[in-house]
Length: 588
Ligand code: FES
Image 1 (cartoon, rainbow, N blue to C red):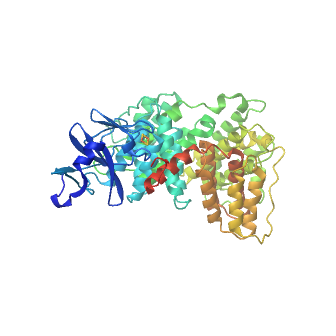
Image 2 (tube, rainbow, N blue to C red; image 1 turned 120 degrees about the horizontal axis):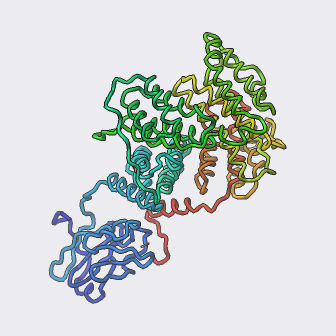
Image 3 (spheres, rainbow, N blue to C red; image 1 turned 90 degrees about the vertical axis):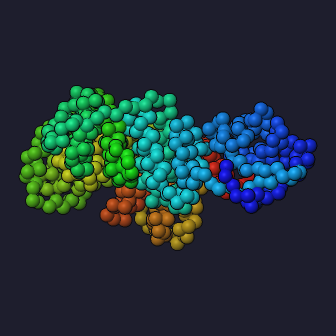
């Protein structure tokens, strides 16, 4: 460790250290432990890098310093740890001049903080170490890297170290990257921690993934690649589909790639209970955050690694036409396939016409008659409704299923209404990316799933009507947070959200408080998705009642699932306190 001679300061007497074996000195506001071991003097930061326990309370044997709290071990000379979960401990240059010990308390940094924390984040992802990831996210944010480095590092890891590719973890990461802008202050760090830790958790114990290669031929048309990709997905040929998709990424622009992907994703019905389209949508969203192309000398564009990793979501998916619930007692799969067949004529009939959504159109999508629903959708297409307009109406119907969810149902059925909402929302967001005609089919699927969920609104949960309130909106937000501390406050949560609107509170403040309530919990994948999706819908909502629904629905969902054990928050809080230099153990 290079150091300037005049940077050395006297800190202790050699004779005293020889007699005691160890001591602590204070320099530049930090405690430094000195050890006399095997005839040499060593200086290390007295705070254990794991959780701050004083290392002078540890044991030194054969050149190894062992902390007594969780028994992390460090090589005494350079501070390298034997235990990656603990991190290396900082050491300081030492000189003995006569009887006096000199140290450099502020040695030059060999690794810049952003590089150190990037490496630690990679370590945390590889070993699935929550505390390491929390510290790294905080350290990167402090080093001015925001969320870009965490998301990019986690995408690189997650697309490589999970044989089956894109899954829950990377979807959570994309979801958290979206939520990042909606939450305030330290919750941004929580969001990033939540995202990267779910990637690590989802990849833990998984074999790695080996990516295929694009075809050499770059003169392939979009239509040819689209047809090959769909055929490969149809016969569940993952390797063939991946090669077609990688070639599409190499040859086509992002909108055309999206067309190919979402066409294949809607050839069959409501794949994987809606997860497939949802995951694909989040993969594209993630690319919005990290860029279609990689940076620097990375030869592999981000789009290639991200989209190639999604292929098994398509080829291995359960197709809802294979499910009894889509075949009996009404063959709704047949109804939907029939509508697929009619699509070219319907679209041609509506060309050049502007659709104005009729009053009560969303109510038409909530009736107990699947044929009526399909007719309402196909009539709309014939009258010129765009994919976006139709998807928007369907996702509003899906939001009502969540907002009206009756708590007399089985608890697990919250997932069912969530799946429908999440799928409908993904179809809507996909229509912002491509105007592929096939996305109308996603609207049919989502609407049929809304239909299948109808009994989960029986009885329909009561929602508060808009009114007036003279309460302070800040008090209402406090009460909402407190309501998430108690189990079963589902209807109260909706009432408080409604009251916040009545009192004229700023919905952005309300969203930030809901974000805080979400990120302090061990919220499951569905809850995170539900809140993020409804926040996005809120931003697009056309009127006051829709905006209320977009926040009442996730508030009910959160209240149904909270409180949890908050173990992630415990980890995040430990990392934050360590970062601030606070004591965690009485022995410190
Ligand atoms: S091993 Fe030192 S504090 Fe945990």
